[in-house]
Length: 194
Image: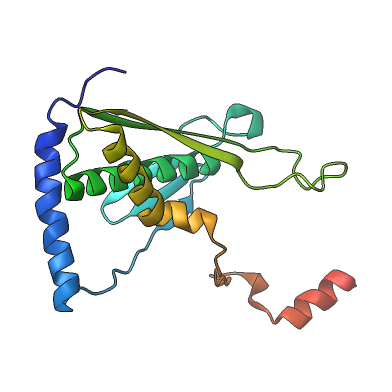
């Protein structure tokens, strides 16, 4: 693996100061939950999904074999990227806190999505990404014991890793905008049955 992160330890010093300040705010009782929000819209003609988060945009698209234009990663691929990003970030946080020097850090995430999932003959095949695994490539002068303790801390504190490992309750609703479907559900049901 190339050593492109030659200044990673300089960043870890900055990260340590930020994490210690955040922990001090938690200890002082001044830290508050942060509301998270993402908006996603489908683009006309291409079906590309434009993800907007704060002042950032990410494009998600399907490969050509699923009527996409390959303009960006698919949702399952983004999920693997999100996991890898979070694991990497928590490694940086924990390395900064523990003062474990890192010459380079890279997280590789893999998984499987099967288009046959849930279809006849494949009812037991998950429709979601599965067989998810990650491998961390670390170059560090630290001892193996320090690296193992760092890994354990990441496993215990990574929010997205925990999200994927633990069941979630997700509230969902549909709000109609300028739609004839805004008629009561009963009328829609009767119209379908007629």
